[in-house]
Every structure is written in C-alpha cells, then in structure tokens.
Length: 390
Length: 128
Image 1: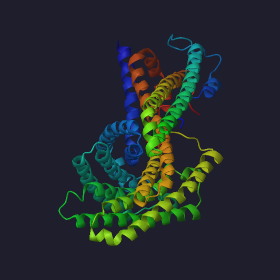
Image 2 (image 1 turned 135 degrees about the vertical axis):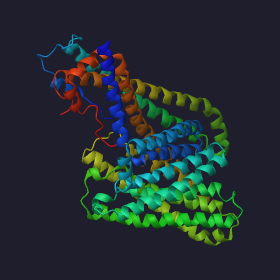
Image 3 (image 1 turned 180 degrees about the vertical axis):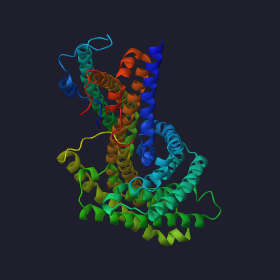
Image 4 (image 1 turned 90 degrees about the horizontal axis):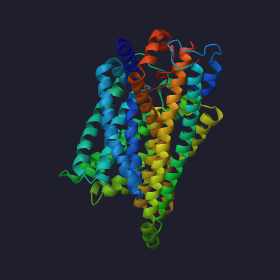
C-alpha cells in the first residue's frame, strides 16, 4: 500500500513536471491557434461548408477560453517567464495574437451566430488588448538595454502586430458603424486603423526582407510564422474590402474609394507574390535541408495566412466582381482545412501523451515503484522533457 | 505532420542488451515487453498513417461535393439537392479517419512509453 502510494506520487510528480514545463515555456503566440481555427471556420462558412464551419466554431470557443486560462495561469505561476516575454524580441510580438484571436472570434459570432452584441463586446475587448500590447511591447523593446542583432531579433512573428491592427478594422467595420451615432467618425477611426496597419507592414516587411537577403539564413531561421508575411497583407486586403463594403454614403469613404480599392488590390497582389516564395523556401527547408516536421504551436501561424488568403480573395471577388478568382478562394480553403487538421492532430497528440502519462501514474503503480529506484537516471532522460517550444 | 515521440523502434532494438532480459522487480521479461512495445508502435504508426489518408480523402471529397453545388445557379440547385447525402457521407469518412488516427496515436504512444520504460530499466537512456 505504501509502495503504491509512493509510486502514485512519483507518477503525479511526472505529470506535474510535464505540465509545468509546458506552461512555463508556453509561447505568447499560442492564440494563433484560435486565430487559425476562427479564420478557417469563416472561410468554410463563406464557401458553403457549413457543417465544418460550425464544428470549427465549437472547437474555437473553448479553445479561446482555455488559452486565456493557460495564459493567466502562466502569468500567476511563472511571473518571471511571463514578464520576460514582454521584453523579448523573439516572443514579445506574439502577444498581439490575443488581439487578433479576439477579433476573429468576434467575426465568427457575427457571421455564424448572428450575435452582433457579443461581436461588439469582443471588438471592445480586442481594442483594449491592442492598446495594451502596442504600447507595452514596443515600448519595452525600445527601452531594453541589451538588444539582439537584427538577424537574431526580427522574424515573421512581428507582423502579428499588423494582423492585430487590421483585425480591429475588419471586425469594427462589421459592428461599429451601426452602433454609434456618428457613422462618419466611426469609419474615419477604422480607416485610420487600416492605414496604421499598412504603415506597420511597410516598416516591418522592409526589415524582414533585409534580414532575408543580407543576413545568413539557416533552415532553423525559417520558422512557420514567416507565412505571416503573406497573412498580414491578406488581412489588409480583407480590411480594405470591409471598408469598401461599409462605406455606404459616407462622404469620407466615398471620396477615398479609389484609394481604398487601389491599395486593397496592391495588398492582395503582394500577398499573392509571397506564396510561391514561401513555398519554395519551405521546400528548401524541409526537402533540401531535411528539417523534419514536428508539432510546434508556431505552425498555427502558417494555418492562419492560408485561411485568411481564402477569405480575403472571396471578399475581393465580391467587392470587385471578379468571379474568375473564385477558384483561388476555394482551393486555398481546402489547403487551409488540411493544414489546420495536421496541426490540430499534432496538438491532440500532446494531450494524448499527457493522458497516458496520468493514466500510467494510477494504473501501473508496481512499475512506477520500480522506476522510483532509478529516479535519477529516469529524470535525466529526455523522453519526458519538452524539447521544443510550447 | 508527424509528431516527435520518445523512442523509435530502431533505437530501442539497438540499445536492448541481450543479457538483460529480466527486469529487477519480477515484472514480465524485458524481451517480451519490448517485443510488445515494438509491435504496438508498428501498429500505431500504420493506423496513424491510414487515419491521415482517410481524413484527407474525406476533407477533399467533402469540399468537392459541397463546392459542386455552387457552380451555377440552375445546376447548383440540382447538385446541391442531391449532394446533401454525399456531403454527410464524406463527413462520415472524415470522422472515421479521425477516429483511426486517434486510436493509432494512442497505440503508438503506449508502445513508445513502454519501450522507453524498458530502455530506462535496462540502464540506457531513452534518447542519445
């Protein structure tokens, strides 16, 4: 009995250690999972894949809540690691995924559940998060004393700041103009966000392209968030079409229509330019340099742009009446669903592993007791350690 | 996308010492447990791959059937009306593939964890 209880304690300790390791190293960009699930759901909804869209919606709602719980738990249990991320050039911009995930979920509530009140609440929450993230992350990175070189510090994840800004504009165009007395003021506010997002993209992509072409580039540098190079302009396209659709008889947007439409096509063309480039770089990374595929939460940063490209192309077809582009939207929706599925399976595998670990702690006390004797050796093995980023 | 698991079959076979075939606590011999672990991993891997393939086929078929309904208005109505049972069937394929993958993942991970315990028991680390 005593043996069994001590073995049970050992098993519980292993589970706690595993969860603790995952939580302490949890990437702030984990909300990309909610972003990706939400946008793929919206793409499915727009293209008539209603069953799949509903399924993804009901996956996204608890996923969004669980990520918030995990994030808050991390801030409370590992405050140092949490605070260190805010000043990290590599991980800090990942906090912007919370803004984008909130707005994408708001768009889901608006489009799929016809709940403008919930969508508006999420838009306000997203706006608050955007202010917090923008004026803490960038200030913290600016005043930090020891800074990495450009080659070490910049990555595609920085463009999540653009995605967050444009996400405020996209959801705002859906929920804001009809809720405020001064429609023109609302549209002016949202147009400013769209322009700010465009400005941020131009700044950041210049640095990223400079880093691509003038710095040593190893396969490990080409992380999945580099697909945000494309995703950031894809959501800028979507924001442009949303502004065009929301214009109505607004004097401001009526006069700006040619500008908005011109820039919308510019963004779409830029997003399209990135796709072959990123595909070739991906082939070089995985096919030529043999970097194996293994689940990493950063892969959600690859799924989101694929879904967003499908949605923005769909809206572009609507806004400019370009039916000959419809097949692109449909094709990319299929690719996005497949990418989502692969990444989701990778995530579920981790939960299965955790479940088995916990089950073994209860069901196999004798073997765990045997493991007690060799604890120091067992502790050193890497099998139950995280290895990659969480 | 594959997942990184603790112990591969080859690693396990390479590290299993021939003379250490009995565990210290009277549990089943390490050889038989190791064989079982290896077969679990093989079966699990096969099921994972099969699950992936079935799910991909299900998704592609579901999308094709549903998109076919929206090609043009007149044909669309006809196809969409007739496509509903097919769409449901393709969703069934998708669900089946997910189930096969899920069972396969459980099986593979069980085998990998068994193998990991055995290699640790034999005094070797589970990964180099």
